[in-house]
Every structure is written in structure tokens, then in C-alpha cells.
Amino acid sequence: MKKLLLMLLPVLGLFLLFGNLNVHAEESANLEKELYEGAEVEVMVNATSSYQTKFVRGGVNSFARSRAGLNALRSEMNGTATSLRVFGTVGGHAFGGIVGSLLGLVASNVLANNINAGANGVSKFIQAGRYSGGARVTLTEGFPISNISTVYEATFR
Image (cartoon, rainbow, N blue to C red; front, side, top):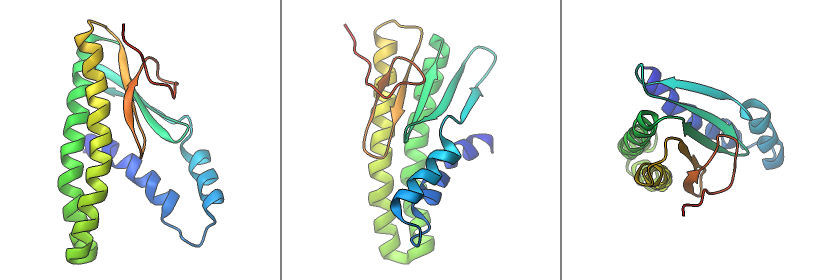
């Protein structure tokens, strides 16, 4: 249940951001920023692996400080992307029939691809032999990050 709530937190943020069409887009963006900016959660997968997730400037940053944490983060991101693809289509169908299914499929695939790109970034840290690293996921991109508060892509030498 906790995992499902963590997966739905960004979706809730998007709903609050775009859900009220009567609110001006700029006001809505400010509301989202006030509600979520800097919100942070520590996810304990087991006794040896954990990672942090934090809302930073319109995106979700996840960061692990151990090799086990990196593996757990990569697995969680891949699982979230898969679940999003399935439930995006099913949820779209529940709310909008066949047209909703198609819209849900397209929208969930776009976001799931960004989450998978973030998971691939975490894999780069693992392959490079690093013990800490993470990923940033937004509506438009996913990439590796070198600390929890950054908005810039990490570089590998």
C-alpha cells in the first residue's frame, strides 16, 4: 500500500496542477510549487537499502547512498514504469471508455518512458562502480543526477 501511495503522489500533484481548468495556469503552477516544493520522503526497502525522493523545481528527484539502495531504486523505478503503463490504460478506460484507454495509453507511455530513462541513469551509476547516485524525472525527461537537490544531469568519465 505504501508503495502504491508513493507511486500515486506525483500523479496527485499533476492532478492538482492541471485538474482545475478554471484556475489560470500560472496560479496553478504556483500552487503546485507551494504544495510540493521540497517535500521529501525516505524509502526503506529493507535494512540495507534505502533511497530518498524529493520534489525539486517541477520534477521528482530520487537518490540512493549505497549500492543496495541504487539497485532498489532502479528496480522500483522499472516497476513503477510498468505499473504506470498498465494502470494508465485501465484507468483511462474506466473514466473515458475506448478514447480514454487510448489517451491513458499514450500519456502513461510518455511518463513511463521518462521513468525508464531515469532507471537507466541509475544503472549507469551501478555500472560505473559508484555507491551513490540517483535520477530526476519530469514530464518531459528522465536522467541521472549526482545529488538529491540538483536539476542538472550527472556526467560520467
